[in-house]
Every structure is written in C-alpha cells, then in structure tokens.
Length: 106
Image (tube, rainbow, N blue to C red; front, side):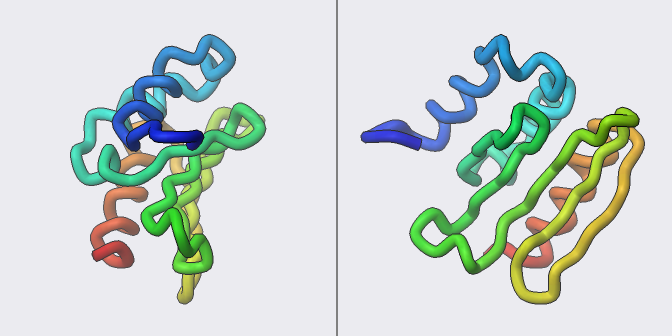
C-alpha cells in the first residue's frame, strides 16, 4: 500500500489488476466478506493473498491464502499459534480465512 491509499482502494486495485486472473475467483469471494474487507490485502507472487490486520506490526500475524499448482488453496495464520488448512475451492478457503479472523483478530 502506498501513500494515502485506503484499504478499500487497495481491494479495488487488486480486483481490477489483470495480472491476478489466476486468483480472481478467490479475490471475488474474499472481497464480498465485510470482515475481510476491513483487513489490508496484499498479493505476493500472483498466487497468494495476504491479509494484514496490523499494518504497523506484521509480527502480530497475517492470514495467507495461497493458490497451489493443483488448484487447491492453502490457508494459514502466521501469528502466534500458527495454523494451516488445505481447501478445495475459493469459497472454502475464504470460510477458513473468516474462521481464522474470528479467532485471532480483534
């Protein structure tokens, strides 16, 4: 995120990025969830959505949703008491991310 771009602007930018077509189905599902739309989204390597709840202290933990080469998704929490789950669809991956957010993000 650069300058004065808001979290909402960042979501909009990601949704419009043509380079993210591989993860677009997951981005669409995630962007429809109000709880996740309040978290800063960052994409890494064109296949991984990182949801960063504490921009000033990334050591607090992040939710990572990664598209695997086989089309499945790996959902992980990087904070204390790390967690990982494998999912078969974008909807299942976003549901897992919502569970992580409910358990770990105030």
